Image (cartoon, rainbow, N blue to C red):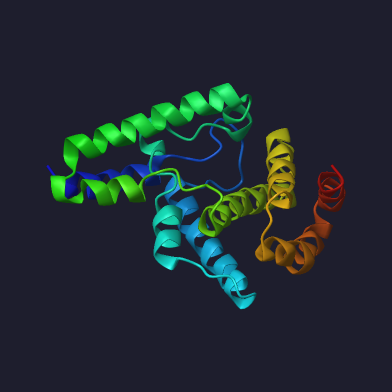
Length: 209
């Protein structure tokens, strides 16, 4: 069926709900998450460029827009489960990459297979673009969790999601990370000050870890 099959499969991303099995005031699909990650990433990349860092924009858009395509095959697995151990994470990644590779082999025309293999690969690596993707992905976890905490959602998983994403971002060496902690996070915490959940304390504990 060729590339039509790929285009048709994108509908599936709209039906996969993130953080399944937990009460949420707001539902988010994998498709919506991918769109937001692209928006975060281009702003983060603008910050990097303003500090004199060269950014490969084509690569950035490719890896951010397609970074969760493999979830069509395995669904959205909760972050605490996915990262329970390095072995489990490696196994899940191997399964996901294998199913994506099989899909490309089965459905994508030969002339476009190298392009799809490049675009649908795991994009998080030590390059500037790979690090920006990592930060953008974690930023969406922060904002999804923040939205639930601000509304008083007492599900512990959202505290864990918020806290772990902050800790992960703190470990990444980029100018945009410094900008996030200096100029964006304070506004986020301030906005959450009227929440029934003490977001400021959760933030402070995460940053002191």
